[in-house]
Length: 208
Image (tube, rainbow, N blue to C red; front, side, top):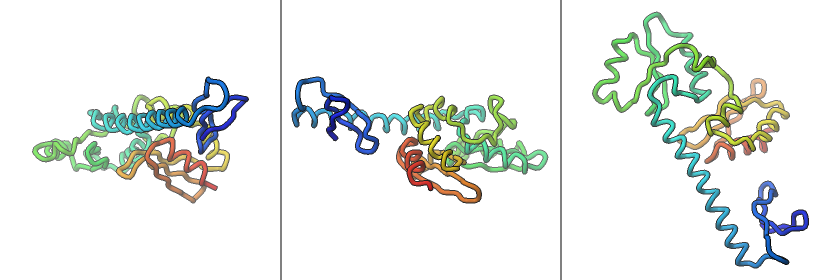
């Protein structure tokens, strides 16, 4: 969308009104310039979304040991399940299916990894912390930015949710897309979108 910003013509974001590119020529930009720049903006936006999805696909495929798991929701779930284990039982996480299974002992876990079981990509949940962080650790914005899940410019959406009294309980990648679960007291609401930023923005905008 073309708009005059601080005395200069610029193409701005329809949703936020933020300038995306300024026109450096004299007068009002031509229709050709506008179409060219809009195509370029759409191209790079698509590439960014593509990169996010690729990053998470590669990230999931590269999980080899429990210490490689950084997803806060997975860590919290593991923390809850570890507390319920009986002596000798083994808790394992399937990278292929994104789910936990409790094996009665070490031998059963070893057997589960043989034959067709290899496709499950089992990793053993070891210890009650990852790099010193508790497994039931809540969502952390700085951590999400560090691991490429969110961008530092997404902080206003997190602040908006906190201002409204909402807390981010889970923020994960599922088969449906990027899923964010927020809670306020006993109330819980879920939002899903194709990128983490869009899911977060949607939650901040719609949550009352």
